[in-house]
Image (cartoon, rainbow, N blue to C red; front, side, top):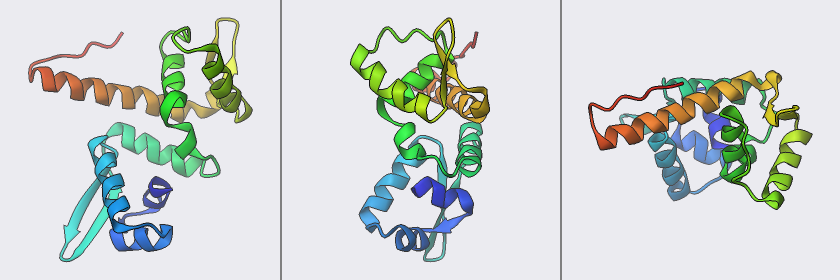
Amino acid sequence: QLLKEIAKRKKSFLQIKSHLQIKSAFLSRSLKKLQQKGIIQTTAEGNRKNAYFSETKHASLLRDLLLSYDFMDWENILRGKSIEILLQTLDDGDLSSFSGATLWRYLKELKVRGIITETQKGYRINTRFSILADFLKEYERYFVTKISKTLSENSVIETV
């Protein structure tokens, strides 16, 4: 809900807090986590603090996804095992690392929403959700790059 609110336009912390009816401490923690993921940025203008989407590629794609499919409950789709399964469908589609029960529960939800389709080779993200696939690729690339930079400033990531 927080991201959907910020996606519409740059918002002050006070506007967000008031509109979503959340506590300041929760808002601050949430915004800090989103900043660490490169999704949002914050600025201070006098006493007023603002939050807005970062200019990173994955943040821009996420913003487009939220605005294009605002009826979807992305807060439940893009977390935990669900996002892990979605990321795995991007690579080789090998979902064998997940238990049968986990796969059944999450794939059922993703298929009902039309996000995942089944093919002869396995599962893939529905082409109608190409923004989601692009976001996931960039999100993954962002974190791989971020992790590699902690290992060495001179590290290079090769994508296949």
